[in-house]
Image (cartoon, rainbow, N blue to C red):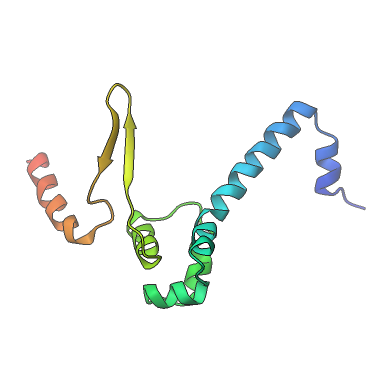
Length: 119
């Protein structure tokens, strides 16, 4: 008979087991973040999907991802009725708001400025 995950975990040194369990908790919290936000706003996946103009299965997939495009996250938050803000905490400068990320209207302006930088 094969070994179970519990058997493997029980056989680990306490420090290693604690590190593994802490990382598993971090991953679990990341997984639940969007789902918790939606639940807090008292919306079902179906209702949020309707607000975003996508299928319910798309919402389920988004809530399981650990990496998401800023534009998709912005649409998700806006469909919940909120706005997305991204802050960079820079050493010696403090918080710096980043604007225009994930905004397709500003993407073409960014492309033009990148051309200037590459010239």
